[in-house]
Picture 1 (tube, rainbow, N blue to C red):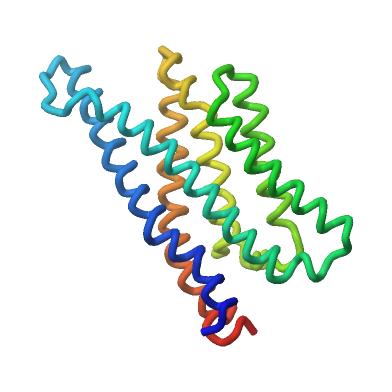
Picture 2: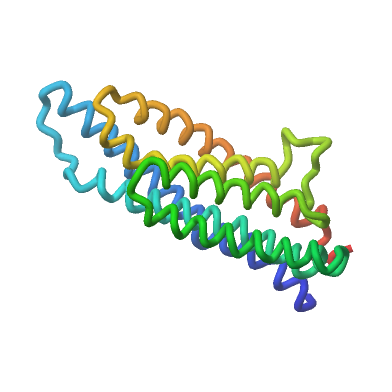
Length: 214
């Protein structure tokens, strides 16, 4: 195992140790929140504490940051180890600026309170991820996008960003439209995370992290 091999393993290690446990916690709190809401709607006294809703929001915010951060870690590894050496100075500077701008946009998204600024920073964060994902050296498997770890991860990251951007609208919308949109997209994201676990293991061996990265 070379230093490059160990650096390549940072992404999957963080996924297993931090992101997937957060996914389980978010799903658990989401289920309890849903059950409590249904019980109250049926005039049934619920034994589920009211705090589950706030806990779900808190874990969801952590999950978004973790998923986007994990994607950035994967991009950082490829960009530092491969991309910067293959592109010119101008493009290298451009990539680094986009990387920093994406992180800054995510931070501002967390701090935004108005719908307009949440939409702006969510768009900037997602755009930054897409631009970095299009750089040379990123293992995309475009010809098999339907089983691609990259495309699954990108879709999941964009869904997490969108969920973070609409969380305040969910609580303000009395019609429940945003809540149902959030539920549907979250279920789809959960399927993507399952796919990430499968395709990630496959790509670790296929790319050749254990054979010197060849």
